[in-house]
Length: 576
Image (cartoon, rainbow, N blue to C red):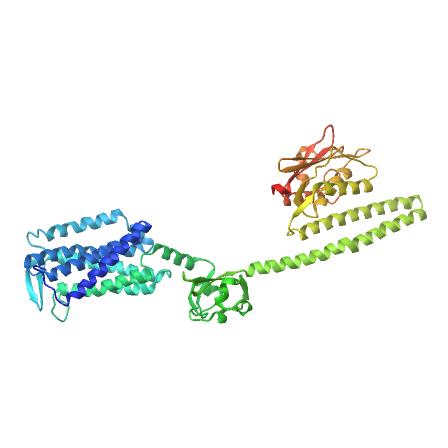
C-alpha cells in the first residue's frame, strides 16, 4: 500500500465512506430515472458533500507523510464547508420555501465559498491554518494547527447555516403531517451530532483532548449510517411517495389502513373527524370503530362492495359509505386493507326526503286517477240526466256546470300526466315505436272531437326512439292544443313525420289563429295559456319537458296560409 498505513479504527471511517458512496449513487440513479426535483437534487448534493468530507478524512488518516496528510486535510474541507449549505438547501426543498432553492442561491453560496477554497491552497499570511504540523496521536499521524480568524469565521457561519437548515426540517415535519417524523428523528441528529462535536473540538470545548481529524470522521461514520438508513428506509427523497402521502392527508375522504388482524395502523385527519374520535385511531380495532357489513373480516374486503355504516357522534348520527380494498405482495400475500370513507349523510337525507315526496306524489296521482275523476264523471252524468227536468234558464246553468266539469276533468288529466312524469323521471328508457304512439292519439282525437278534421300526410315512418310510456302524452297534448285553441269553424289538423339521418321530425299543423313571434318561445313556459285559453297552461310545458328528457327539441312555426305548426324532433333509438 506504499506510503499509507492501515489501522483498525479506520474501519469506522471506511464504513462511513462506503455508506456515503452508496447513498450518493442511489440518489444519482434516482435523478437519472425520475428526473430533476429540488428535493432529490439537494439531497444528492448533501450526500456528496458528507461523502467527500469522510473520504478525504480517511485518506488524511492513512497518510504517512506530512505532504500527503496535509493535501488530504485541505481537500476534506471541500466536503466540510459545503455540507452546511447543502443541509440548508435540502431543508428548504422540503417545504414552501423551496422557491429559494434556485441558481441565484447556489451562485451566492459558490461566490461565498470561493475565497476560502482559494486560501486552502495559498494561505499567504496565513489566515486559515496557524502553524500546521503532523502530530502523532496513538497509532495515527494527524494534522494539527491553530485556527485563523478567517477559518473560525467560516466555520461559525456554516454551523449557523446548518442549524437553520436542520431547524427548518424539524419545523416542516411538525407543520406537515405528510412528512415522516421518524425519518426526521434519524436524519437531523445524524447530521447535527458530528457538527456539534466538530464545533466543540474547534473551540476547545471538550473535556478531553483529541484531534479533530479523528473525532469528526468517526462521528460522521455514525452520522452517515443514519443518513443512509433514513434514505433507504423512509424514501427520504421519494417524490412519488411524498405526493401520495400529502394527497391522502389532504383529501376530504377518510383513510384507514388496517393490518390483517383488523387493527388500524394508519389514518388521516379526515378519518379522525368523520368518526368523531378524540384519541388517535391507530391501534384501534375496526370492529370498535364501525361494524363491517355482514360481519365480514377485512381479509374478505377484496370481494366486498361498498357498504354503509351509521356512526353516532356527539352532535347527530352520521352515515358513511365505506369502500375497502386489500393490498397484497407480488406473490399474492395480503398485507392489510385500505378503507376509504365518505360522508353521505346529506345524500341519504335527500334520498329519504325524495322517497317520501315520491310516495306522497304517488298517493296524489292515485287520487287524481280515481277519486276526483270519478266524482267529476258523476257530476257530468247527473247533469245530462237533469237536462230533461229543467227549463230553458236551467239548461244554461247546466251547460255551464258541464263545461266546468269537463274543464276540471281535463285539469285532472294534465295533473295526472305531470305526476306520471315526475314518478317516471328515473325510469329507464326503452325502444318505443313512434308510429304506434301517434296513431293511438290520432284515434282518440277523432273519437273525442268529431267536429274536427284530422288527416295524416303521407305515411308515418316505422322508426323507434328511446322514450317511455309518457311519449303518447306528447302527441295527445299537441293535438288537443291544436283543436282547443282553434277559432276556425272546422278545425283542420294535419300530421306528418319524416325520418332523416339519425333523427325523426313530427309536424302537427293547424288552421287556427297561429302564435305571434313574441310568444313563440314563451308559449312552452310553465303556466303559459296561449291565446284566450281556458286551459291549465301546463300542456305545452309538459310536452317540452318530455321531449327534452328524450333528447329532442320542440318549437313552433307559422303555417301557410294561416295557423301554427308545432315541430317535434327526436333522436332515433339506434343513434342514441
